Length: 452
Image 1 (cartoon, one colour):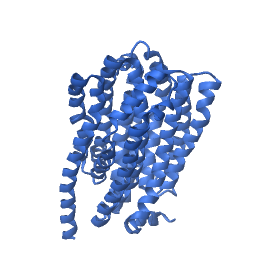
Image 2: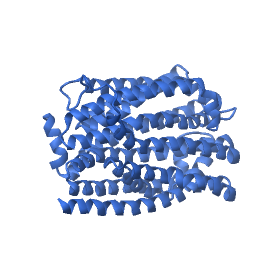
Image 3: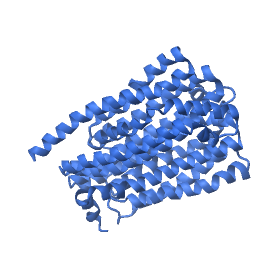
Image 4: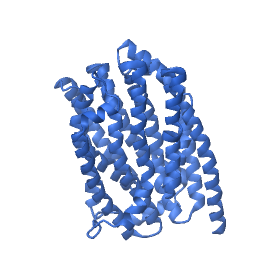
């Protein structure tokens, strides 16, 4: 397919087929990585033990900080590039690409250095106990070098998709996941490296994927590629990128705060076994949310390009298609969490206490999960339009504004069960807010459409 034809497809192709074309590779790529992460936790749970699962759960907030800096640039760049290409400004898109890779390298170097210096205090802050700290530390020491590579891979994989290469973006993720799947059991069981083996396998797999992504943007035959004169940082280029990327960045940063609150509260009421159950909850819901995010990744270039091209009818229909698909996905997750939580927990461990804890956690946290897909798609819709302030507020509504007060309130009434109930109550309120804001935005878009 010719380069210009890839972009014309975003404006002219039938939307159902186009959303499928862009979402399926994104969903497959991100779900493959999520499935690998789940398999890795299964290996760790059965090969090392429940204390290692608890230690791994403690590392999630630290990983979220890394992801936050990655999406601050990567998600914003993907959205801005789609809009700018829709306006026909290819040189502007190249400037965004060049500035974004420089800022990704700067941010990555800074946060990795800080993590390395203050690793133990950070892990303690996020709820590590004397039992789980050695496992968490062992994992983080080996995963730290790969965090920057991880940012490059995921962030610029999104940009690759936004510029008309959804299948190629999926293949790059497959490559890394395939290497991980092969190496993880060898390192964990064969070489008896334990939890650090999972980290090393992840580093290697992600490094190979990142190399493929960078090679794509070095190839001058690509729709968008690195070019001279685009690496000098310009605030006029970075400001809108970081404004859009601020929403997912804040979500990930807020996730760190929430994980710290949850881990410490859960440990107070339920000990290491309850903390380990968070790892099961995160793995299961993470797989479902990854599917939703994959659909959003497919939606983003279509909405962004058509917004830039003033094809408002197409961006509205794209949103409703994505919202319908994601609602179905999350409804299936809510059903599984209610009816087969014990079977799901059994996959991660053979420890009876952990299985029982995981069963109760899943049953109580997922009864409103069917609404999460719509809320996430709505948040990403505002991000795709470049509506930074609304996207930030939507992101904060579920993760911070409603969840954190509930986490401080409900456990006082129902102790550990209060922690779990905070999640569905937060999902319910955030979804109602999403419906209200989306109604206002759709009326605004309809007025723009009528004005021609």
